[in-house]
Length: 248
Image (cartoon, rainbow, N blue to C red; front, side, top):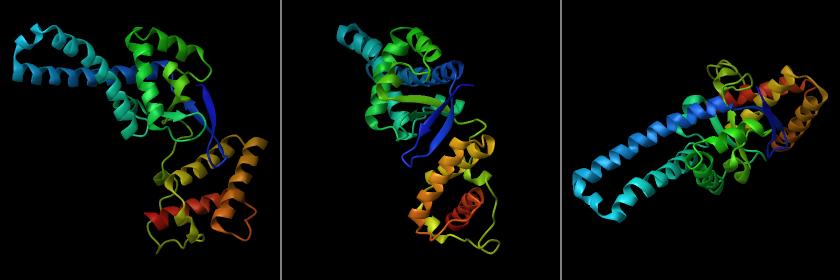
């Protein structure tokens, strides 16, 4: 499985598994089935309200059978990925997500670029352009990804995780938090911490050790800690425990 390293805005490098061409095709097929179902519903409404005679007007026919499917394809991908943080329904079912390669969150303009180039990548070329580029580029990007500086990653991989999978702590009665200031951090911050631990434990090399040290130093500044424990991994695990207890 091909992977990619993305440096987050917190200057921590996280490794993700890139979605394969097969997974992206399945996700697109699922999306296409949903789009087709929605299109048929719209046609049913139009014909119910105006009858089939409405198609006798050339402009209406072109709108219904030309612009409507194209606009529907673009709108579906744009709106679904914007509302679901980079996941259309097909991607959600397949466990995939759109991410920016610079570590920032994709913006509305990024999703718009992906939606517009979807026409070239898949619709007008029958998917040939997208398939060739995804299978041949190092970051497995289609044209839409290249223009938006994005790619599609797998969420179901060896380094994926959920906060509830870290440690199961019942309540404050069972555990006394050591760093109450951890409340100011977000769940995304916690995911960065957990991913840094996972990478270091799986690949305990110098690069990951450095990333772990930089993360701990940054957290020390944010939490205004006088010093750090010698065991950096245990320190990060404690922060995760504290966060779960204090925010659940």
